[in-house]
Amino acid sequence: MTEHFLSVEQATRRFAGLVAVDQVSFALDRGEILSLIGPNGAGKTTLFNLITGQLKVSDGAIMFRNERIDALPPHARAQRGMGRTFQIAKPLTGLSTRENVMVGAFLRHRAYTDAYDRASAVLDEVGLAARAEVPAAELTLSERRRLEVARALALEPELILLDEVMAGLNATEVTQVIDLIHRLNARGVTFLVIEHNLKVVRAFSRRVIVLDHGAKIAEGSAADVLSDPEVIRAYLGKKHVGHA
Image 1: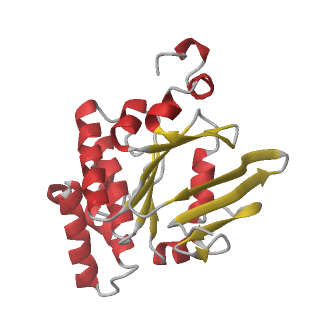
Image 2: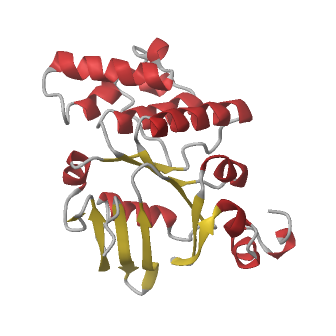
């Protein structure tokens, strides 16, 4: 059996009579940037929650670095090298930008000065160093998105799951985030990304997975998947077939 960095095997999540994730399987190798796309309600964020531990699988298995993790709580998965952002940024608004990042840094740096230094380095990397002492409540949308990435990076993860981290950003801001992801990837960080902007998907992901009604309906190169008529119908609607 081939060993993968992350392996999702027949993952299923039921809510009463609703199957939100339906026997989804895929593998992610170290160093990849894999995009997960699909229409609203397709099950993408639910799948993220299964991988990171906010939800438990009803059936199936999740393997990370050759260890089965689907019974572990979120903090244990973070300790093993997994970080994530959330679709709706929810910083601790009563804390400064730096203090928000320090919360994550304490996972591996128990001393205050060490966590402070780690948070400072991360803020510099994501372009928020000048906003370190600003209350998180005062950050712009773009800055909050960067803070989400910073909080994930503070955990010193090997895998980061990005949940629509570019939603609501303008073209310049999107380019900046793409550049940041490429820099982190070149440094060795692996990414699984939920993204609705197909131009962004084409820009940085060689492989794409498509969910619809909780099930995986396609997997392959960005070019092949985004030109698949079934994917275009599911993701964009019939009127867009041929224009993805």
